[in-house]
Length: 330
Image 1 (cartoon, rainbow, N blue to C red):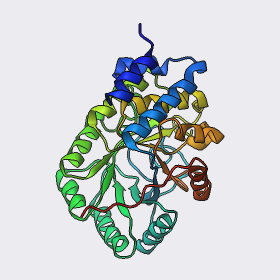
Image 2 (cartoon, helix red, strand yellow; image 1 turned 135 degrees about the vertical axis):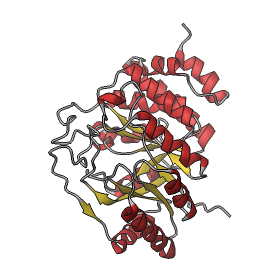
Image 3 (cartoon, rainbow, N blue to C red; image 1 turned 180 degrees about the horizontal axis):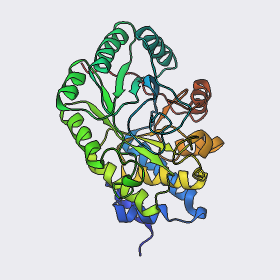
Image 4 (cartoon, one colour; image 1 turned 60 degrees about the vertical axis):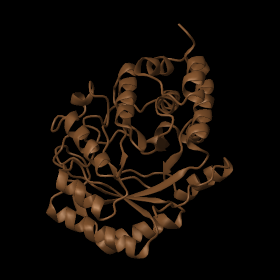
């Protein structure tokens, strides 16, 4: 069998063709002694096909907790006995969060709600929130509101939502072990509607939930098939009271191996560090940014604390990686 890194150098770096699922298994199976080689190649791929800029994003929870779905990793599920309780954020607080995000140099601000899908109350809050933000803050607004119907997709596109996040979470074959209250295909349907409506699609998931190496490769390939503009990579941060609350966090070397492999599967995609990197990678987060990642979420996440924004910005400055400026369609 040909060496997977030699194959990837020709296929991905030179030709821009992502690894197949079978090739991804080989990359994810490389020994620890070759992970630095893998990361270095992923960095070369990122620079060639995406450039050297790093996109910075902040997120805020508009509606927290009380979600009826049973995603086994999530403390916002109302099904489990977790400490997160239902709460709503008002419009002035939403605008303030967007302003604070813009002040970090971020170009993207994502409004998130813990729901199966938006009802009319939530859609009204989003309409008003997006208008209020656009009136005073120069930043792209994204949303993550669960599963959508066609009318909701069309409305979000019409009010200027730039990007919609809807994660697959994991591979199709492992999905029933993670969620039972809705299907993998329901998530796919929302993603496809978003793309057809002209919004950018942000679609990723969580690694380290008990999936096999083969399922990790399957997940990467299924994401690539959707051709998302952005893939957020989260790492399981076990939450008390959830079915995955007692799982051991993914090891740093496995996380780095996965980051680099996902870059080689999707050479042109925005690959974003998201939740869980602090406990999984710690000080090795910098190595991940030099191993294929070209976007980060700064500040806190939805129910867990992230690194202070200034620490991430300082890391990018130290690495001489310019922050992507806000770009508006003319």
